[in-house]
Length: 240
Image 1 (cartoon, one colour):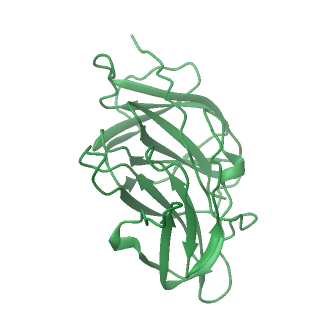
Image 2: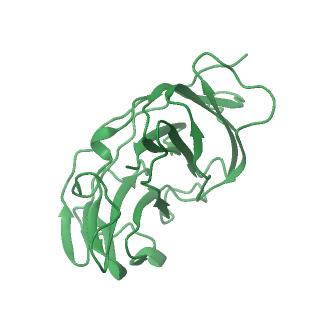
């Protein structure tokens, strides 16, 4: 029997909207957005190239819908650029390997701040950088999955029409933490994403279902699997 598990609320922050997220920005530039998936970080200032581009943002809550208000990208310098996510005390939560970002020119990117992979809240948070695809397939939907859940270092995933439960081989197998799948091209419609992993809080639970969600034609999406306190949840962002 499959049981739908509704995760706790998550806090999310984004850079100032780049209005459409067009990756074809001018020479020497790229676009970037930030997703805060660490429950222990309540509010951060987003600082890129020494400039604060977002301050004390109150993070919206997104459940099964596409988080359209969170899909904006900020245009930033490509190549080496300083990057910080600071709280009110000035503490920078960005892991050291990302404090100088090297973004490829004319790409759009998502940085995810995630809880420590050790599970120890006193350890440093983890960070993951993904390159997004904003080129749609005509009359189709493109969906990919990104795993940033430290409690599930490897997951498999079914992307199924609403009302269909998992059977047979998953759509995506053995997706490791910090990686994203390739985009799957599907007809537009209502889909539920079924994650296969360890989602038990009070007891073993193999599946976490997320949806149903309506995915529109000519759009690309990323579904992020994340840890939230003692539960797990996903958030869906449009990539174009």
